[in-house]
Image (tube, rainbow, N blue to C red; front, side, top):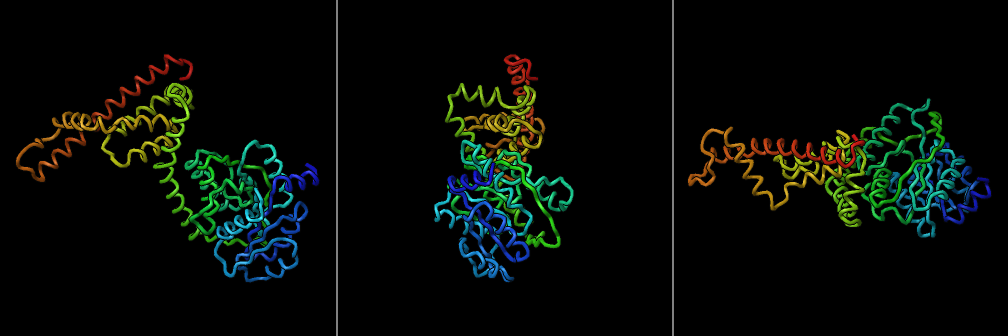
Length: 390
């Protein structure tokens, strides 16, 4: 794209460039000047800087500036910037860090990618973290973040930590719960949960230790990020995955759902059979309250079909529970010595212990047996329908 085409697209698509900054006096002017080559629709959020940042910003009276009295974190600065951008009737915001690692001349990459999309999209710059000169701790942190983003959304990206992004302002959440570096994880995960595509675009990156000032605190911020991911994973397992499954089921007829989401889903017949077997095993095992967490986690770990495993794990529906318990007690009774008659008049600790042990042993026998039968039956059935998918 030519410079004029980029400038016209920025204007037509109502795109602004948001620059959060905190004590980056060495690089801030260079970043602002670079962005001005493409647009004057700039919002700078001075997050309580104590260096010469105010004097630098004062040189640009024609751009929008927000000065916060004290530093409260990058996430807080971005939230305030997004709010201002929407007040000014922008539809998109490109965020660029002020520490000099991002090149303003990559703005056309975001603009061109947006024009090629037929829907709202959130774009994240891919810095190619495997190239020479990238600090190992940054590369490791990015891989760590990529894994959890994939686990929480099902979307595979090569870079989830880059601050160089394009946000669709009317599709991102309105309220947030994190104020610092972890905010950039929260926003992309929760935006993906809203069924907005999240994609990478290639960008350049500069790591200059003489100029770059990083405010990332390894221990504190990594701890905050880990806590956030723990919460997001829990929400994923207990709400997002079941919600998506139910919504997908509602949108289709039963026959179409089985055909598209089960029979033609990813994986071989063997993988699908193992997925069903895992679901039945977990559903019949004495893991009450943890069945969804276990079945999804194990499906991810062993690369099985999460939908099939989740469906099969619901074998222990309320109407079947009395029969499952009765069968488990029956199968476990030969392995327990002593009185196990729950109808005995003398209810005591020994009786309760024997019945519990009897149930646990029996439930594992039942779950293992029916799991094997379900897996074998599923494999034979699928192999008959589609013998080539082995």
